[in-house]
Length: 312
Image (tube, rainbow, N blue to C red; front, side):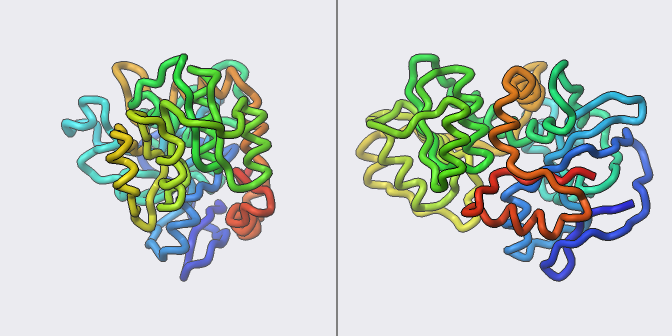
């Protein structure tokens, strides 16, 4: 079968043996290219197998599913508590598409616990967005956002736009600071305004020292500041302003389970309720054989790309 892998820093489509072993076989319908995929390639991080941790498809019995790409142990204290994003195996080992084969392929085998049955009305082709949306669900749940609070989001990539979509489920007062016109337009379609004044909650989704300066500037005194991005190059914090405003800083990593409900199940339900999320965030759908071009497009935000999805 076909699979997208990286060799000597370059992405390509290769032919590999179909997956074998325990689990549920899924025919992949859609696999999104994440910004972390691009960063891992640029940093020369050794990905041993197939890319793709944002994926959806159909099981052998015909069930449409999204896939939570965390093949965790299930028995360590973190897993038992529901915080399996902190599984003792380590994210570099248990994440499909990073430490294990991912979904940029014709098919894959996943643990049954990774399956996310789709709500009625959610197309399988759009359900790959459940994974990045779950990132926003998890982080926003951590800060306990309230309906009357004003929220500003810094960064208009897919995570920033997912944060807009999730925040708008709770409060109508959501603003987006984005770098590109295409991102601002997508934010407007999802209900975000342009930033004005100071905010009760500010969410950094860009992951740079410059974006953190912008985020702190938008905070009111005593505001909550959520770090929802991945800080690949480290972070210089504007500590004087953070201290002067007495900000409450929370960091968030991936997604997990709260009680009996997984963040990714909530994300799938939000996607089903609001088709504008997929139509606003997914800007390109390309065949798996065009993976080289797709990764190039995904890395060129100035061209208008937000989420590029491969369709095997």
